[in-house]
Each structure stands twice: as structure tokens, then as C-alpha cells.
Length: 457
Image 1: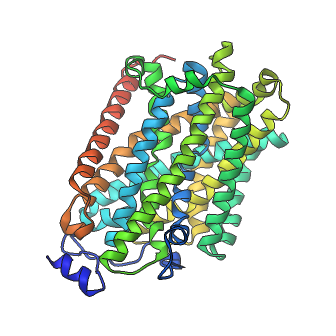
Image 2: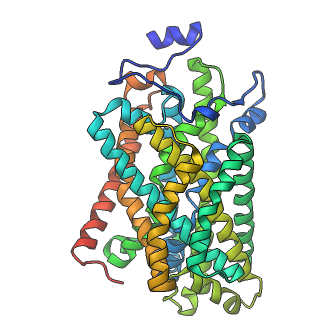
Image 3: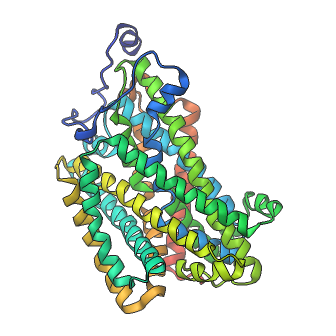
């Protein structure tokens, strides 16, 4: 009733009665409502104005951690795990749409929503878990970028890991140039990755019938512990916990009408934006696995599970000299893209949960140093095989943290008091809880196998 009157009469205020405490600050204040959406635009021009945040989110679905799990999955099991990539991509589309809905309807990002809903100890615990996930993600970016530098320029892994700390300079420069520039750079790097893997697919010439069969889920994925371990790693690398916090914040960079009608329209366009961007991410993830399956698994090289091995073997096995270079170039673009969005996610999480503001470059440096220490130790002691194992394990850590981000998101967006007229419809609510249950059950199965030694290599 109230919502209807507000909708008719004008300005819509985010519902406050459903929260333990009122909102005290804007999310990502320096970029909040800085991208104007002019009135009276047609559908396509309005979609263009809203497009951008979805691509920043999609970056997290194709970071170097995905590469390790996709290569391992393709080389060991052919196209079987393609269905896992498809399923996790659909999960991502649904969850990211809920993030956009939460941010637009309440004016809160997910971190702020947790702070305003839960008691201080619970919110603090969720923050710690999220920071662990961000550090695991950052670890993947550090290792992936270092590997790319090693493959392209021969820079030793240890030095490559140390060089990744310098990206704070790039972040600091971009922070002063506007949000649209950041979006443009991210989209450009994504297109570079897509082009590189489009060419790799052309060179690999996979049998499309077999690829299509891989999109059909197989019971073997659950029964085979080794396959399940990689499958959960793929889900962890695809549905990224920190992306849920990121998306709920950056949708608020758009300046649209603060009426329920304006907000409903913003939800629609933000959902289209993220869905299209995540389809591109699905293509890239699927391409990595398909290339690994067509080149390595098909020729009996099921032992290829590391990025460096894939780089060394691609050109000779395909008979195309440029294949390995394209692979490393795409990896470098992936690492740098993830660096940019990881900065924002870290800032949003810290500010949202703790209500503490910190300069983005300083926040990034702290996160990077936490990730660099284990990466340097691993690279120095164990070399390439150690960093590869660390890369896959970081994705499993991400997957285990997922329920602690997904459950609050689904719960908040299902509450009428919090969301007003933008509360998720019943059918979407049921679907969201089903996805949540799948994530929790799969993670519980992985944890059981991992702890009691059921996983085989």
C-alpha cells in the first residue's frame, strides 16, 4: 500500500524499517551516482547507459583461477565438466541479478546490508570470511599474472610475483579518471581474452557434437571424488563470493530516477547488463576447457593441469606457432583485469562491513602483500608445480566461502520489509534457495572428501 502511493507520488526512499540500524553512508561514495542516465532515452541507448557494471563483475568469472581449474578439468575429463561451467554460469546470472536488485532497492551493498542486519560480532565474522576469500582470489591473480610475465618475457616467478605489487600505481591513476574509463578498460581487456580464445578454438577444431554432449550433466561428476574436487573448484572460480559484494555496490554508480518505477527500470537494465556480460564469461571459460579437452585429453595428455604446461604444449600439439603466445597474452589480460575489480571489491567490503574508509591504493597494497607472501614462498620452494596447486586450492577456498555470502543475499532480497515493491517474486525466491542449497550441499561433500581423504588425484 505504502509502496504503491510512493510509486505514484514520486521519490522512493529505501525501506528502513526492516533493518536493525539505518544506513549511515553511501557505497563507494566517490563514484556513487556519477554516471548519469538521461531521461527520455530509447531502449538501446538506455541499455548502453546502464552497461558496464556487469562486465566488471564478469571479470571475476574469468580470472586466472578459472584457467587452472578449467585446464585441469578439460585435460583430465574431456568435455564432461562443461556442464558444471554452464550450471555455475546460470547460478551466477541469478545471483548477480539479486545483487543488482538489493543495491538498487535498498541503497546498500551486500556488506552494508549485513552490517545493518546482523549483530556486530556476526557481521565481523562475515567480514573476516570475506577477506579470506578476497585474499584467496588475489592470490590467484598474483600467481596468474606472474606466470604470464614468466611465459611472455622470461621473468622468474618470484620476481613476477613481486612485480604484481606495482599495480597499485595503475589503480591510483584510474581512480582519478572516472568510473566509465575503468569500465572501458575492463571491457577492452575482456575482448582481447575472447579474441585470443576464439582463435584457440579455431586452431583446436573440437568436435562440436562431443562439446554439446559435455553440456549434459553426468552422474559421474558426483560419484568420482577427483572429478568432484575439480568441479567444485570450477564453481568456486565461477561464482565468486566477492563479486556479490562488488555488484551490489557498483550498480549504484548510475544516476537514475529515485522512484519505484525508476528503480524497477534500473533493476531490469542492470540484470540485462550482467546477463550479457556473464554469457561472454561463459564463452571464455568454456573455451578454455574445450581447448584443453580437444588438445590434451584427446591426445592422452591427461596429466596437463598447470598453466605453464598448457602454454608449452599448445603450439607443438596444435602445430600453430602463435597459439602459446595468444594463450599467455590472454592470461596477462585476465590477471590485470582481475586486479582492477579486486581493488573495488576489497574497498567495498572493508567500508561496508566496518564503516572504515581507506585509500584504494593502500587497501590494494595491503591485500596484495597478504597474497604475495604465500605466493613468493611457494614459488621459491616448490616452483611451477607449487604455484599451480596453490592456484587450484585458492579456488576451493573461494567455493567454501560462497554460502556465507549467498545465504544473506537471498534472505535479504526475499524480505518485503527490506526490499519494498522490489522484493523478489515467489518463483525467483524458490529458484534462489534451490541454487543456495546446491552450493551448500556440494561444498559440504567436497569438505567431507577433503578432510577424510576420499579425494583421489
